[in-house]
Length: 107
Picture 1: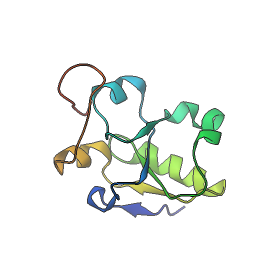
Picture 2: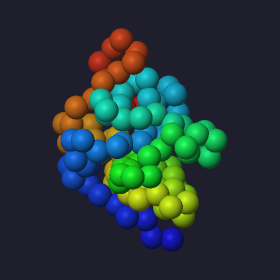
Picture 3: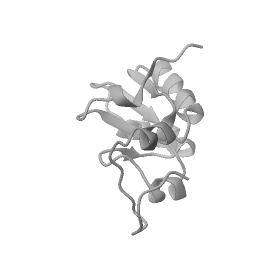
Picture 4: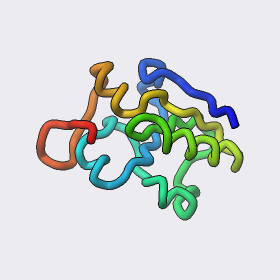
């Protein structure tokens, strides 16, 4: 199944970014405006994801987010995978924040 994919630099500033990584990964560093729903919780929390806007799904490197985007698209959402995930986000020098109190990092 083909999943639409975009480069991290193509994610609009006002995009709905869905981060599907685990809690420890999220706390270490994430996009400032991202919404966190771990992949394992997505089915039970999918009502929190808006259907009226494109959803940019991100994880660490792109595997989990590709699965999430495919599942969302199958359910009627307009989802795209953010290629390379948070590793590419950080490498591109895009803004990140941390919940840990330390400098943001991708783990």
